[in-house]
Amino acid sequence: MSLIVMKFGGSSVGSTERMQRVARRIADYKEAGHRVAVVVSAMGDTTDDLIDQSKLLNSNPPAREMDMLLTTGEQISVALLSMAIHQIGHTAISLTGWQAGIRTEAVHGKARITDIDPNRIFRAFEEGHAVIVAGFQGMSVDGEITTLGRGGSDTTAVALAAAVNADVCEIYTDVDGVYSTDPRIVKCARKLNEISYDEMLELANLGAAVLHPRAVEYAKQYNVRLVVRSSFTQNEGTSVKEETVMEQGVTVRGIAYDKNVARISILGVEDIPGVLAKVFGALASNEINVDIIVQSGVQDGKADFSFTVSLGDKDKAIAVVESIRGEVPFREVNSEEDLVKVSIVGAGMVSNPGVAAKMFDVISNLGISIKLVSTSEIRVSCVIAAEPVQDVVRALHTAYGLDTAEQAFVGGPQDRR
Image 1 (cartoon, rainbow, N blue to C red):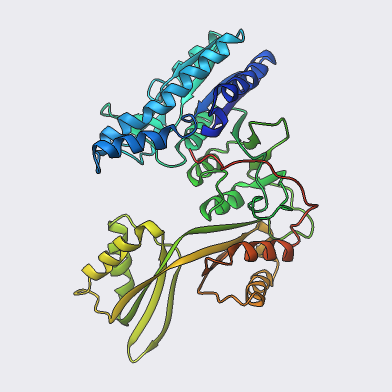
Image 2: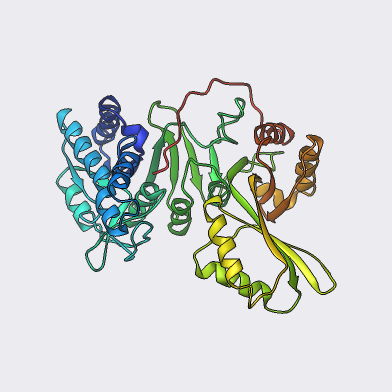
């Protein structure tokens, strides 16, 4: 008998029919003798609807009250799913995040899990129940209800799997695994049987929506075996684990893209020690994440440098830079939108020269200029104009030998909670 953690996103439980299908999957595991804990997101568009309602009453609602509001979506899901399981002859108990022992930082909207006390879950297992846990939420040490931010249900599931020492954590979504790229763009994208934590973490950080980066970080840290599967089919999914079998001749495993990119350039900066520390220290203190950083050559004691931030942070980042003009004199600061970051990822890249050169060649052959480049041992990212991104992804996918026989792909928007 094994212990299995299952996670179902909002689209997987978005209707009564889908809820019943999920209940049947859980019952199948119980009938096979397994202990089952299930993490569930809010149904369908529930969270978006709640946000819209809040904005009708208050254009800038307090973060605490938003957490009180948004956590109700998952509570509805777990109660209904528990009822559906009872209806087909099995017992289940629904638990909010705090009832399940999930403790978090005292931060509203984007708290991190600090600890999970699984005793109540184990008691429910001993009583023969499937345990249905509300994702995306927990409770701080001072008793405040908190939410975990985007991807919170994925994170809940992986952290719970680590806490109960689960044999596997299955993430159910509306695609049947991790693909070499977005199958909505490349119909001949291949489904990966397995992928390493490091490769999956890079892809998740670079725009692949199937798993949230924080969930992959937890899985790697606690060696939780993940399987990404479809909630609509019985197909085998993609296993995410520490070590994977390297496919002969394959250096690139996946291609991701991220349209949430803006470039900021600071021109005519004094080339003196400590300048970059002041600029990026100020951005960090304002909780602005910076991605790619490039400094150009120095001329007449002045330097130019550029960096990327998320599109939503662009205006805030410019304001921060302007606010330190007295400490860091510069000629001007400007920005650019309508950009996309395209990335190739693969553990085999580290021992194969010429991988980056091929990427640059493919992009240049399409007549596209590369604005910024960033690399790691298993990743190369290029920032380019947004408009040709689909052509670039298709060309790279072919160039690195990732195309498979064209297949019909059925699926909707991937779950993000």
